[in-house]
Amino acid sequence: LLLLCCAEEAAAIVCGLKNRDVFVGESATFSCQLSHPGVRNVQWWLDGSPLHNNSVTEISQQDGMIHTLTLNDVACHDSGTVTFRAGSLISSAKLLVKGIWLLE
Image 1: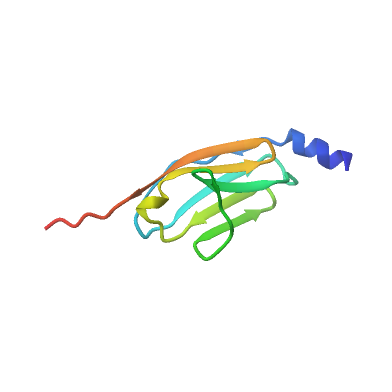
Image 2: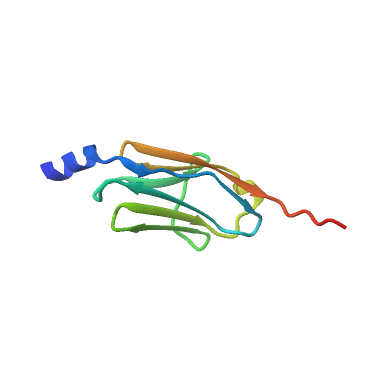
């Protein structure tokens, strides 16, 4: 138990979230890499609202260190700030969903 506690405190973000610009109907993927696995209380947010795994929002992790969020079939109202939180670690990035304008 002591090792897990110390490991969580020593965790760091190796590679944080990056801003994404996508068009309406596309998918937007955000990834955050931690220095090691075992960090508890991992959560994704969009503009202050918690996100959960469902058909539109895919949340996954690889080896407990690479955490990925994919927002499928995005709409303009999905534009905002995406935040990854793992314990006391936080990384944020902007999502800009652009409309498709038809030129005649």
